[in-house]
Picture 1: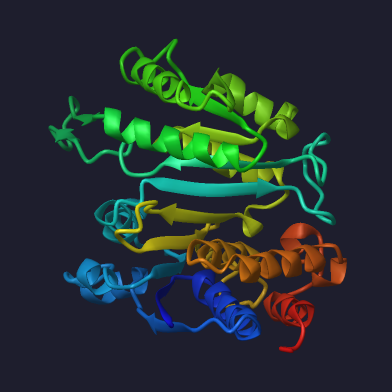
Picture 2: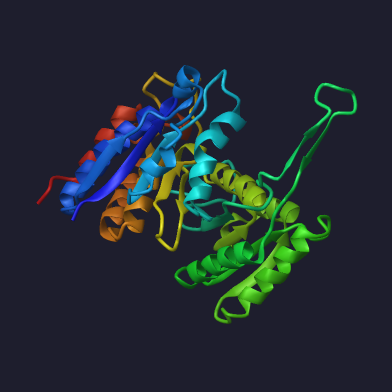
Length: 354
């Protein structure tokens, strides 16, 4: 049975890494007799500049029937980031209840981390970010625009349902890994929402007596990401804290260019969305040097979510092989390869269909 994938290449290098990823996906799907049917949409900053909207008014209805969404990157000079994000990514995440943002972090053989103690085989953890509420709410506004007394108010929203389900996901994930959860907080400084977060996480932890867990203040936790990156297994955090920590973790792992993410609706009532963490990188767009591995790893997460775990494992193994050799690593990783070279190397590693 075929599965339908909505593809949104987006802007800048998004179009390049998605093209490379589609080629690699086709190869691994042939190898595993998987049928994926793609529909591509030009929803992007370019579309915004042309029409005044990142996606059409019925965009969410268009996406709803798909099994998954594969996104490249959005963002372009001349379009403010809040326009591109709130015009495409955030409406998708919220309409489809993609309340888990999953960001795996690994130091691979052949990739030098800027952190001395971050070694291959020792740094392998996952940041589980709450993805639809928290600090990134739509509640608030601005008053007195343009006047000296102008003010802005932004409300953080934490619900018992929202914190409970992200905590449950983190604890359940830890059960499949090394059995340890770290919860990010700042309850010594943020007087209402963070103590509430701590209380709910503790309540949910009681249902998982087989999983060890601890709570860490975000400032100390950020320091430990650098000083003790091998000590983490599953890190669960609010929307803002998870966003910051996952980018820091990607840098610790050697490059944001290989960092993947999955925006998941664990109930599978709606399509989940998969995207590399890196942005549209307009400074290198069109030069053919973008690292496609963040998108490829995101596609592996998509395959696993769709029930094709062996194919996902093959993709990750091909990534591991290319990263070991300088000739098949891109410049952001200290290598010499361009996008096409990495794509060809991935295809070679996947081998012919038997």
